[in-house]
Image (cartoon, rainbow, N blue to C red; front, side):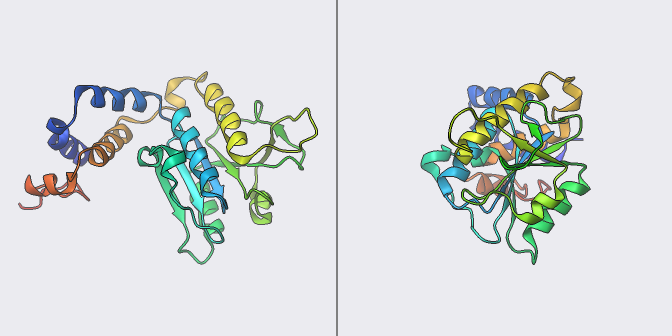
Length: 233
């Protein structure tokens, strides 16, 4: 029996080129949820969008957006459409968005690593990644919140050799994610790669975002775009 994700993907397959399907498969082969990113109240939309572009480039699937102070604004010019290929977890409606994000990460077995140039801890190239890791980036001028600092399992910094104390957030994220994803891929694939079910789900979501009016096509074929179930028994 076909999964719901398979039903949607197979229904949209005639509208996808072979090159696009192969691109999906190549990206899914390298995708990971072992490393995830948390952006806490990033002020400048171009910085958040640049981080998302780096996430996509490094194969990081999940980005968590805490928006209780600064909302995330989509910046297509910088992100180049990469948010469409990522799984975004947004925390803005909850009474305590930061707490909700922390609870979600803890429930799913993540260690929390906050980036801070002012706290002694690990360099980005030696922070432990034996367990799922969420890398937290804070606001451009203050860094992560005191609440997030208190919840951190690790404090992470990028070594600096000049007069500047820190890097722009998007640059720091790109360096950190490159190091973490590289180290991640040195581990057995089974420890960091997506499950077949996760691949099917993402393949279906990507197809829906690629094919124009995919929801109408699925409805015409009797398939729910939201659940993948038949609309009529």
